[in-house]
Structures are given as C-alpha cells and as structure tokens.
Length: 216
Image (cartoon, rainbow, N blue to C red; front, side, top):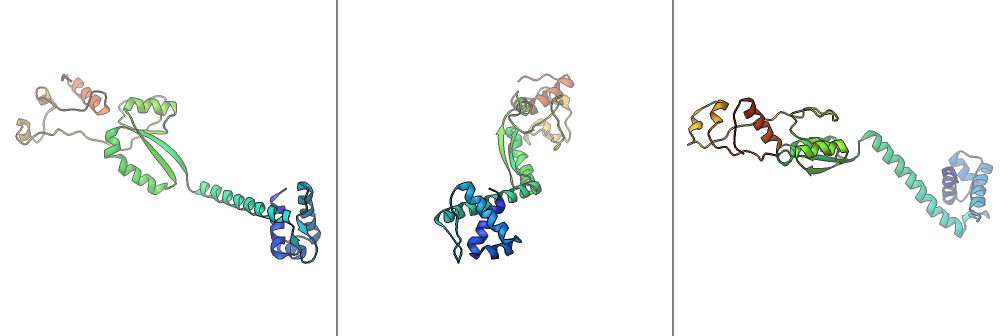
C-alpha cells in the first residue's frame, strides 16, 4: 500500500468513475484500475463495486475512512516538520539562583519568549554550585548565575553586569559620605547574603583581597 493508492481510492469515491478519477490524477484508466486492484489483493477484500455508477462496497467505506485519516496525518506531519525547520520548538530546563530568578530572569525570558514563542521553559531554583553541576551532568540545559571562575568543562558567556551597593540609614555615620572607602567597612556591622550564595562569596573575596576580616 502507498499513499498514491489511497489518494486514488478517495478520488474515485468522489467522482464515482475510474475515468474521471484518472483525469483528475493524471493517470490512465488502466493505471487507476491497477492501483485499486493492488489494494484489494493486499487486503483480500473488494473495495469498489464496478457496476455503473461506481460505488464503494461496505469494505470500501471502512477503508475510505482510514485512508482519509492516514492522508490527513501525513499532511499534519509535513506541516509540523515544515514549521520545525522555520521556527525552533522544544523544552528548555533552566537553572538559576533565587535572586536572579526574581530580579533579572523575567526580562530575559520575556525577550526570549518573543523571539521563540514555541519553546517552553522550566525554571529550577538552585545555588551556583548546583547550577554548575547540573549543567555538566545534563540535568538542566542552561544555567544563569554569577560566574567568578570559568569552569573548564562548560561554555559560558556574559549575559549582563551587576553591581553591589552599600545601603545605610540616613542617620548612619557613613551616610554623610558620597563615596565610602572599603577600609571603613571593617568595623560597622553589615547585613549580607548567606555564606553559600555567590554574591556573598564575591563580597568575601573583596574583603579578603583588601585584608579585611568580617565575622559571618
């Protein structure tokens, strides 16, 4: 059985004539008869009553329903493959930290969804170390996190640059300064991110580089 045979049967059901079906399909009448005979031999049943006017048998009616579904399925498949070649589709698992997911990701995803509306995205909240490990073992496709040292097994690129700012009360002694040297942060108590976060590790690295020691 091939698709041309199914199309021939469908055309005969509409024209009720082997000759007219052949004209519509650019086939000779013997070629039309041969295609139908091949189907009947393969399925061991009579599909068409060849008396005039030509009609489908009960078996032919059942066969016609399935033939139409098969051809429609093929057309749907062709369309999906055509769409796939033109518009990317799929499902991306993205890992990121909670702070990035809240502050940065909505803008990034909004732009991404506008560009690729058929791609679904699932967000996984995790620490930087978990993100690195998950990307490496393939449990997530992409990670967005603060990156201080490049991982040799992963490819990375800069998505954006972030800043850290010191925030104090207007009554705090440091509020009178427009610029605060880092040395002045040796004594005042600071509220910072938890030690396992990338942002905290970055601040700790800066303090260590400037020979400042802070208590956790």
